[in-house]
Every structure is written in structure tokens, then in C-alpha cells.
Length: 185
Image (cartoon, rainbow, N blue to C red):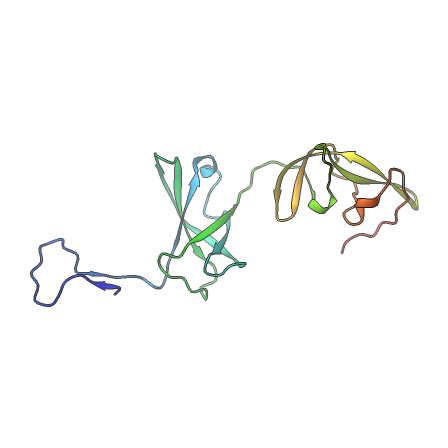
């Protein structure tokens, strides 16, 4: 009970609020999502939840309910999620944010953002490795970038999916320079 709104012996009318009760277990987190993603949502959609009370940490969540009624003012739908980790202490009114892991159906080239070289004139390039037998050289290739997420960037133009690129030490390379390939584990 968080508040008592009447005193003992006080007369009340039917429908008057007497006390305010607050749940402390089984709490859900409500999020508004744009209508553009509504058709891609289902209860198996992965969701990562961040709580302002626990900065720097993210928690896996589960979509419990997708409410199929739009808010006409914002054109958004409500989803209710719960945390997978029941040990995390939630309190009513806490603020949270979420990232939905939606399958967009698109496929493409994704590289680490450290592989990109950005120039003042707006060009964006990567260093591609050209391997012939035991020797390998590099060549600079101009690319167009798309969305970025978790330190990765999608490449929309200028790079084939099977191209080996330089991620570290790419700032001082020259066209045609010999390199030794060291793959990340």
C-alpha cells in the first residue's frame, strides 16, 4: 500500500478510492513502438532492455503482450515486456529503454567501424587485401555506408561480401603496399 486516501470512520461514496496499492512482483515494462515495425513483431522478437537505475547494463527481455490498438496521436503501438532475469529489482515508475532485434529480411555486407577511413571531402574508404599466393597487397576502395549498430557498419555499395579488409593499422597504408594477414580469432 503506497497511500491511504481516507481516514477511519470517514464516509465514502461507491467508486471512491480508498487506498493505492502498488505491485512489487511480476512487473512489466511498457514500450511504444512505431507502426512501421508492428508487422515484424511477435512474441519471439528479441528485446534488450536498459534501466536508467542500472546504467551501462542491458538485460534480455521477453515480449509478453503486443497490444494491437494504435495511439492515433503518435501512430504507435504498445508492447509489454518482462525481464528474463527475475533477480533484477524493478520498481513501479522506473524509466527504461529497449532495443528490438527485428529481422528486416535484408542481407548485406557488415564490417567493423574501425575499418572505415573518413576523409574531410566526405569520401569513405576501406583498405581491401588482394592476396596472390603467399603475398598480399592492399588497395583503397571507396564505399557507401548504411546503418550502424554495436560498432559495426553496413556497406551499401563498393564492397563485395567475400573481400578481406584491414581493420587495424589502416591509417598509414599506401596503395599497393605489401601486408601480412593476421586474422582475428
